[in-house]
Length: 260
Image 1 (cartoon, rainbow, N blue to C red):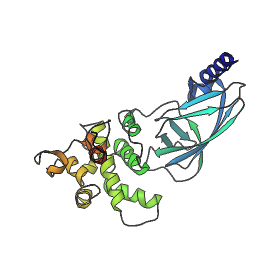
Image 2 (image 1 turned 90 degrees about the horizontal axis):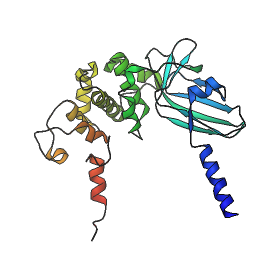
Image 3 (image 1 turned 60 degrees about the horizontal axis):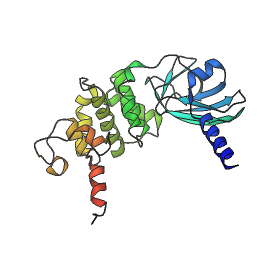
Image 4 (image 1 turned 30 degrees about the vertical axis):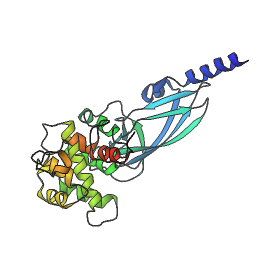
């Protein structure tokens, strides 16, 4: 009896082991999808399994969805959706607009057959940032797609939230977006990097000052790097790899009790 239970458990696990790419599941009509998005930072999805077998559908980061008017949104984080036989599942996908001209209106979406090649170096960095704010990702995408400047970004913010002065958090998000673009493409010289208004805000902002000094190639305090003549590495400040000696890792290490 125990042996049978173990075999049954192994079979159940193996059923969901292989995830089917979303595009393949749609093409084979094993899954139906109804999608709608707001043109900007989110999309809702209902998936329906049309078969008598459980299915796991893999929606990758970087998948592009397109509306009837041609406006596109891109998925920021990968999602695996497990569907029971003939079952349904709902999901909300974190998205970003691929154009600052996207209208903020709800619309039906369809999967685009093509990814956006310009984002290929950037998206893997998003996957390493578990708490990455969507505005940070959105601005990084606009920098890559449109070389967006500071004035255009503040106008986008005013259109997507109640109009208000730029907050310290939003300045820090802009610095992070620039840093991610620089790491993904060190040869790129974004217009936003040369913007004096953002530079002044970033260097006066205690939330962003350390990263901004690294971004603008300025010397920093010994407490950050151990060498007052060198700026910290952007990968360390953004914590892109385990144990990369970023400020968070160093603080965590200090808080851990010493072992006898």
